[in-house]
Amino acid sequence: MKHKITQIKNFLIGGGSATALHYTAMTLLIYFDTLPLLATTVGALFGAILNYIVQYHYTFESNESHYRAVFTYTLSVSFGFIANIVLFALFYEQLLWNIIIAQLSTTAIIMVLNFIIYKYIVFKPKESH
Image 1: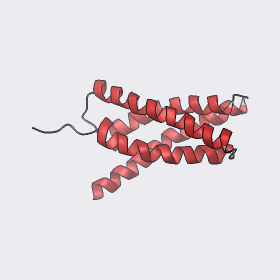
Image 2 (image 1 turned 180 degrees about the vertical axis):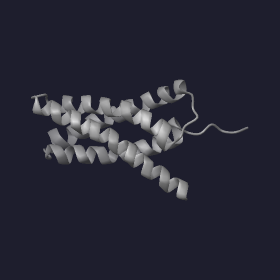
Image 3 (image 1 turned 180 degrees about the horizontal axis):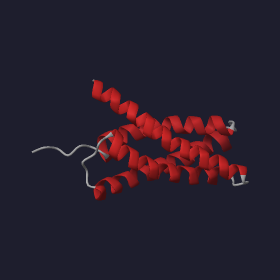
């Protein structure tokens, strides 16, 4: 149980760092008059790169080859990337939520999905034979 709590804590710290990078890039781009949807897209890409490094080494202490891990991570990020755009567009452009509330809500949903996908698919420990 202690390992699971530590893993969740590490996931939140690593993901929080990646999210901070995402939000920083997004905020700077919006400040320089980039469309919000494009700004969150670019921010998500920066965050994804940092997140892989942190989650692989720190949270899940993966022993997967980078070849497999990068491949499955890229698939999961692609899913998350599309989900981020769809959810943000829904909340911001369709429901007319405040930009910050739209992005925070999007991030919360993506965070839960990412933990499940990373733990059971991307950084899943190799089975011992």
